[in-house]
Length: 80
Image 1 (tube, helix red, strand yellow):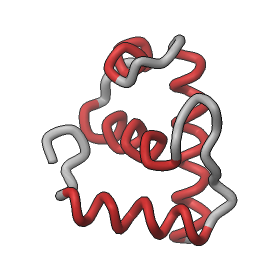
Image 2 (cartoon, one colour):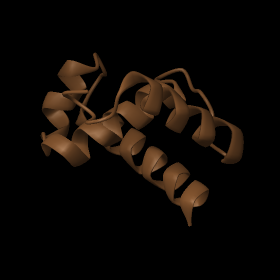
Image 3 (cartoon, helix red, strand yellow):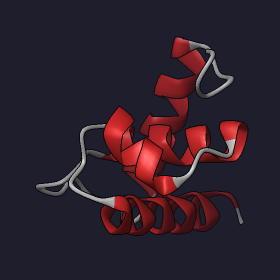
């Protein structure tokens, strides 16, 4: 709850909604769950992508940027 502001049950529910109703898919770099988690951390905490890449063990800040854009688009598609 500290990083995303959601309880585990709410986060699981959100990931399930995104997984079932959007074009989002798992890739070699991240799962849908990780993408949504990174996006929510970015929104809540406003951390720079370089720090998020360290926290989530990703290669660089460009990868984080692509993941955030993917998660943002998946959530946008689900809820608008």
